Amino acid sequence: MIGRFETLMTSLPDTAENEARERAGGWLRIDLDALKHNYTLLKSLVGPDVAVGAAVKADAYGLGVERVAPALYRAGCRRFFVATVEEGLSLRPVLPQDAALCILNGPTPGSEALLQARRLTPVLNSLDQVRRWSALCRGSFDRSTCLLQLDSGMSRFGLSGADLDILCAEDLLAGLDVTHVMSHLACADDAASPRNEGQRLRFEALRRKLPATLPASLAASSGVFLGSAYHFDLVRPGYALYGGNPSPERPNPMRPVVTLLAGMVQDRWIDPEVAVGYSARFVADAPTRIATLSVGYADGFHRRAGGLASAVLPDCPDIALPIVGRISMDCMALDLTALGDRPLPPGTGFELIGPHRPLDDLAAALDTIGYELLTGLGTRFHREYIESSS
Image (cartoon, rainbow, N blue to C red; front, top):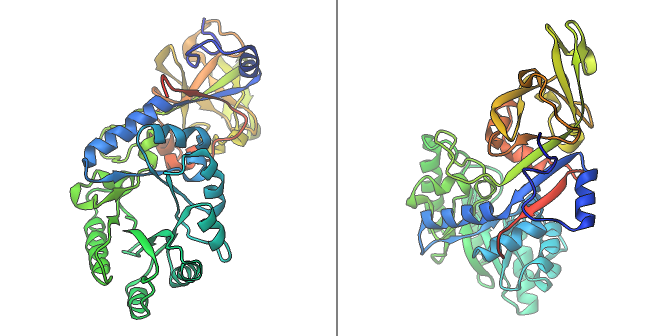
């Protein structure tokens, strides 16, 4: 038989922690050792002259920024990227003061003085943001650091060539301490796309408009694997740190960070012609063993997964157990017929994401991306962070 927490426990928890585990219907394991390994691997790929930051926006891709960011700091990371001002304010007390916290969406109107006071570094994406930040720095005589984003072809964030002409004509950079000029690749996960080289050349052309040569950053996770021409002075990985495959056409070089298990509430045998779940989307065509698992779409497991995805028992990973019927808000049905009459106690954990059910495989089955799955993980899981040493 499989113990409820057999695949999760690495040390004996205290009583309160153990009781919390027992009450949970699903368990999310975040392997901080694997996270740090992935950071170190990326660092080795770009070499000693290129800094490696970390994207920890959206609560570290749903994995808990208060635990993830300090682990990355311990691995050597000193520059962290979040999306919004509020994310930066929440992260600032979590990290030492020498960590640079960069706000990708830039300063919202009226937030400039707060960013300066809390030592948060905005990424300036528009002339309006540049002017507001420049006015703050001139008025306070504090050349607070910032990054400058250029639109190299994604049409999302950043200054255009025309914007740069105005910026230079008005000498708006004179009062700014710009640590990096950056842009973002739209097709980096497709190494064969000619748009990658087109954006790189466009980025280089836009940089030449600036009055000085500044350190540059273009690559995020997938861009790291496009080669040294894309590395510049700083890379900003996110998804790859959390175990996602940065190069979908090749085997994943990253270690899995996330393991998601769903606990079994009950199981039963049903007869042929008996339906399972809402709208009777699954009807048994033979005697079928059905387990009810305590994870549903309220936990971030997509409603459309029934009939498309599967789970495994961690101790027999070669047997795929199909998810059947519609996913409910708080539960799902799993076809255990392949296990025969093997006894399984209530609370048995089935792996939905993990070493035997890779995140990217699940995303492909659901016609989405692993980023969406990670950032959609709910709050009801019992979370366990694994780290051998700090």
